[in-house]
Length: 423
Image (cartoon, rainbow, N blue to C red; front, side, top):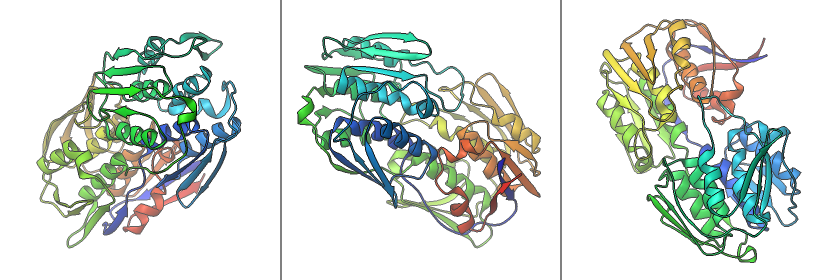
């Protein structure tokens, strides 16, 4: 069994370089099969989800090479195949293959996606969107069966909630639909803009990405071609390391979190400032220095441009070090509080009531054996280990490796004591 071990109380100092956005790249990779040509993605993080998607593309006879954070995808000889078992079941984002394959082949059979359990995450909005475009949808033997024997056609689709996954998946499917597709109440996250940008560079005709109405004018298959695209920086990774800096810098030291887009993180940065974090925000970086005692704040997650649900768990850890009582409410994933039990195990004064965490700080944390119950909870456990007395042992680290590239190296480079161990 592989675990992370973290010895706490080592002050942090130096620069952490943020990698490409995991939540973008897991959609960009499936989107590349729409080119039928060579797509080169730059700034791709080395993550287990990326390797799983590469494996899936190889099953479709797509050739991939991945070196120095550059992923080359050659879909010249791509062929249709039902994807029911194996790598497709390892990650949530495998559902983007539904939209991409439906667009390219007018059919797709995709096994139930995996990923972190954050409570019910139905994909009914994706399926309703496909049906609006003219697809037939059924579930058989644990797999989604999609087909459009008469082709896909443009439609007006109003999402019940601004779902990121549904917005992207419908956008992928609509690229080759006849006519115009309008997605109303669309999600506005930066990752959606990133994906629309690459699709447009490949020959698609998409406008409105980043607003609540996206318009896709369908193009023919032969209108699409390869391109070179640089993945945007990962705003969730950036926020995680900013929390690490806010709780871990020592007197006279500072941590610079570099390669970010501050406009993608305004709600998070606002709450960091409200909590009393001493930071300077520049064009593409944030520098954090030792702060006065942190202060309790109330936080409510929301769709972009609100406070990102993916940063709720790391920020909850920061609140355990703040003076006073804080309330953090997750309006996106009400079950995203499994980290509460783990933080309690380390000595935090925190409890969970429905979709809310109530934190009273500051708490002195003690090293313990804890579990990374999901990706962002795992990151919170690693950060907790940085400030805990003694050694923290983090189990089920495969969750963390899904979303944080070279986390040991990045933290070690700024003075943390963290290592991988077989037990």
